[in-house]
Amino acid sequence: MHVRHLTVTDFRSYASADLSLTPGVTTFLGLNGQGKTNLVEAVGYLATLGSHRVATDAPLVRFGAPRAVVRGVVVRQGRETLVELEITPGRANRARLGGAPVARQRDVLGTLRTVLFAPEDLALVKGDPSERRRFLDDLLVARQPRWAGVRSDYDRVLKQRGALLKSAAPVLQRRGRGSRRRSATLAEGESPDAAQAEALHTLGIWDAQLADLGSSLLYARLRLLRDLRPHLATAYEQVSAGVTAASATYRSSLRETAAAAIAEGEVPEIPDLREELLTSLAAVRDQEIERGVSLVGPHRDDVHLRLGDLPAKGYASHGESWSLALSLRLAAYRLLAHDLGDDPVLVLDDVFAELDAGRRERLAALVEDCEQVLVTAAVPQDVPDALRGRTLEVTLGAVAAGPT
Image (tube, rainbow, N blue to C red):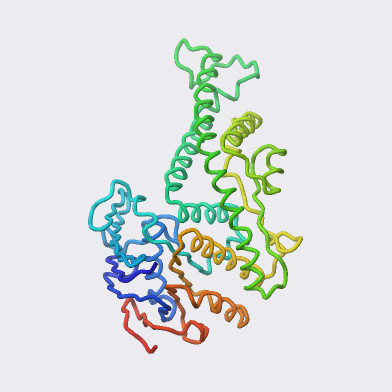
């Protein structure tokens, strides 16, 4: 799999750019702020409908422009597919596949698959649990695009349930307190008990939906992590020259017994996870009502990374943390390549400047045979000899061919 052609209009700093790309290694060379990362960000957006640098789409549109457009010609097994994405802040984005509009933007997912290494990846080790959850979910969608819908539906239900917990808190918090004071939220003639019963009934409906979607998402994550672990262990051994062993454990927000079994590597079936989610939600209901937030579900989980017997977060050195972050991405790449039978496009965004000489050379040796590798670097000396290929020089948003 590779991108043969990339076109952007009003994307980031580019009024327009039109690039022909080839299999093998292409290096975008330019000083910081010249726009080289914007180009590989556009490639990543074609694959994931998101950016590795920002959480929303608005910064992707060039200042003063109403919308941005990204187009890419993707080649897989000799067949070409044109992917076109229109990004309009404040409105629904639109997409076309092979020249024809698609009903939903996410229908283009799976046409192009990328794995991106970037300085932001250090947050996978040192950052909040949300970074590691996002890593799993993004990889899950890259592996099987249908999970994008489950992920979106879960987020919607979680938001609605959270809104109910907050809005109904004055009614729900009176439960069992014997308060005789009338709440301003009650309708005229409605008893507190009736209002509480209605709020609890509605909460129960959202509990069921959260358990339905959450059990499916949790099951998919657990299977994904089970398949990823051996690739992670191998990748870390190769990147770090076998200094120590890397491992990953899923930390669930379910009740203690179920969470312990999952941490040991067990992957319960979806119906069992659904029942456990409902039971765990019931166990923390009073706390949720008091705090106004959902305390159980995939959105509260984490992936615990370890080097040897110690947790990576808080104990790993800077170099070890970088090796582990790179190993997670390399493991994701190998898992996708194994599943698809094709190499995803590999993007190395300003990574080599962060690595010592040994890690640079080892990483380069591991990826030099990938079908398409896109590298960004500030100076040629940052790029290992094994990855010296076609060079495109980027200066203030202008792209020109450089020396090979």
